[in-house]
Image (cartoon, rainbow, N blue to C red; front, side):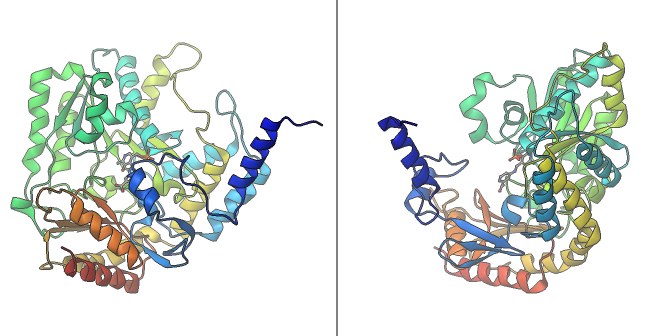
Length: 457
Ligand code: PXG
């Protein structure tokens, strides 16, 4: 076989890129939600993970205070999940998702329905939280259309909501920085509830904040202005995660549920972060005793080991769409990798592990210790609020003059330097350790954070 010079170059380049003995070039990978230029000047690379720890490229052990990105709820490198993925990859790598099937997706749907809040027992698989959100929005439209109310095309989201990065999720999301660049092409049919973060009344609350249930009444005003017959659904995170761990005021979610029921709106809970034990209950819906009509999940569904998301639908929402459809495909939606065999294998092993190790109950048992540990940071420099619920925590700092977010980002860098991984969003440091964390891990997190806060400009 003869080679042209071009293909020799190509072979050399491929060999070079794959050569694990050399540091990779960082140029080609355009990184997500990352300050690419700064990162590539001073990269932070992780190369291994086990249990509660990462190993950085320079060999340092890093305590994982964030379950990766809120997803590795059972801790890293769990053997039953690893084995399930390996075995599935060897047995059936891929099966077409449309008009064909394989047994594992049905098993996983059944397992999810078994642990989900009562009534949410129809499951649509996606590959991410963003896809789950866009799927749920489409389902809401399909449901109303099926029931003879095609005029219900509007959505209600909430300020400071994060629902991923699909155009639907960005439209209902409430982060201006994410919306503004795309605003011209987003659905104009969206209103936003006010967010519930009210440090003036609720700073340093323990558990759910006492003040703010009345903020749900903004939904009544939107309904009055737009007309109930134009609104399909309301979407909120039970606890807003990405924008700083904003807890729902006592009574707030109940009130949203009641207003939705009064006006025939579907209530969507985006449980991409709050699902799978994060709030010391299986789902936020269980924690708060409010059941939505549609629920989006991802992240902890597979312990982060294979990408996967899902929408759980109330049975009658599913049935309405099925019953109204002409023969053939009932819901014109789906992904090549919906219910991917590797993701299903990982999901089944993950749900089993949560059950075998009673990790949601473990989170509930650790939560009071966790809450005390987070609140022990009160009084340290710059701390203006502390929030904790289940195994989530937030440390809100006063912003530096003229440089919002800079103080918390410095804290993140310094924590990493001292061997602790945290997340920052704005001037809030967010924590969400794996549910297998021991008290000693919690103590280390608070010790490191205390030291970092004391040294911060
Ligand atoms: N909904 C919610 C509530 C989320 O938190 C998504 C949807 C989108 O999921 P995907 O899988 O498409 O990313 C999310 C994702 C952070 C952080 O540290 C949060 C997310 C993702 C990355 C970082 O705040 N949430």
